Image (cartoon, rainbow, N blue to C red; front, side, top):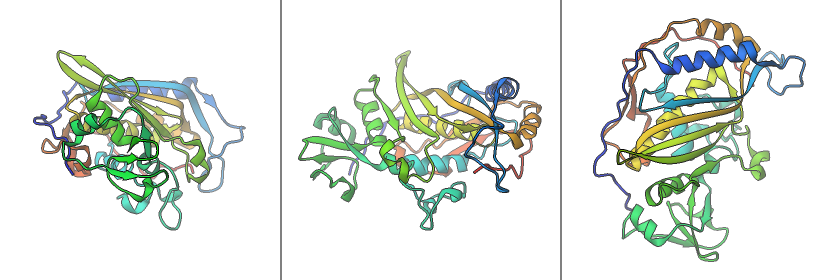
Length: 337
């Protein structure tokens, strides 16, 4: 099997700002949620604490944050974000396309796994599923994978029996790819398409998901500046625990955007994060108040292994945050389940 490789791709190293812009965005968001958000106390809520008490929140609807990766890598400095662990999770979903916690190096999904380690038909399972596409062509496949790439022919319903990036459905006479491979294909073959996106929220599979997807959709959009293609992404999230997950998600999707941009020979540009329900849990409010009272530090420098170009070659050790000065970590944060 042959993969498309870039002839040249420089290491990514974002410029440092006077102080981290990600800190400013995070502080403003948290202040707005606490001061102007809606309190859910008294409502029938699903989440609860380990002691059985209902986990209420202060929530803000429709939070939109914009991070330009050409300006800085958006890791907050108020406390440290574990970049390798965040990268490990995003690669577990997007690269391994796994739904089994035994293929993950952390324990963040343990609460939602069954006895076999599966989280059901969620996240990576959805990205691994192959679909028929009517805009994949033989010429495009050769452009991406090389002239001697072999495509496996299958019949309707057989796709789960075969591995490989591309299948050919003989019954429908269409090529098949999963959502990740289709994104990479589109960005290489017709990068200015307005249809390059992924979606994890499959309504038919929701009953078999141990947790409904929170970050459920990405839309990719390419702009051109000074002759260089810039890759931008919209991350849609239906719900977010602001204290425990906000910068974790921002950093891991910034890493994902950077890796995909490297693969398709583009510059990582804007990550637009859209959160339908951004909330702070009742027991988190004092922790958040203390966190956003801390001073900001300069944004860290993001290092992405310059020897790697293919998205499927990256591992968690291929990322690093240099000059990452932060405040103390917050320990023993209660997690609502």
